[in-house]
Image 1 (tube, rainbow, N blue to C red):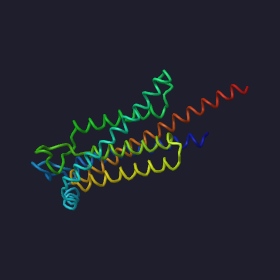
Image 2: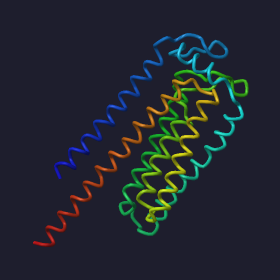
Image 3: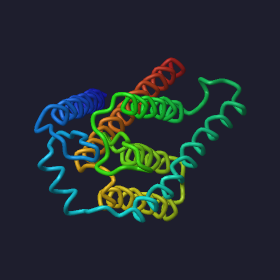
Image 4: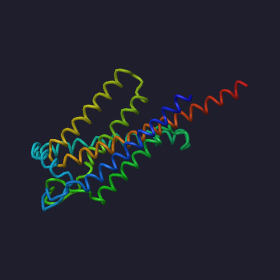
Length: 235
């Protein structure tokens, strides 16, 4: 039990470290090498690095639209788990009887959505290209962040929900390929500064680690409660 406790504590330490790193990185993007580099004189941090990578990638609107359309399945995945939780709530007639991992996932989705809204209103920098003639927020890449938050947590859920090993492996492999293609596609489309992509990856890593840590902690508490109940029954 002590080993389990230590592992859970380590998970939360890693989570805190990733969150701190994400915040520090964001601050660095806001204050280091900030100068006009985008359309309409828009400024960006790490301008030298961002301009270098943007020159390499160029702009590929077709790839941008493809990755935009391919991000739609994310909504179906989120909706699918929401429906799963709703069905459990209706059948079990109590929110407390809904699988804890589904409830935690719901809270996780709310957190990610709030982070998305925050960066829509608190604009760190704008895209390196105009979208329909307008400047849009670029940091962090929302598609990258959403993709790398939803897919890894979905894989964790599928690991638990899909009992057939071959099917589970196939589904999770396809999810991994899908996420990888979307992130790489977003980089190559040139619609975001490279620091925006990196920011999306950092924040998603922190959020996913938080989800995993909370899940492990809740499972540990549940196991302890069951063990205590068994001990009382045996005595």
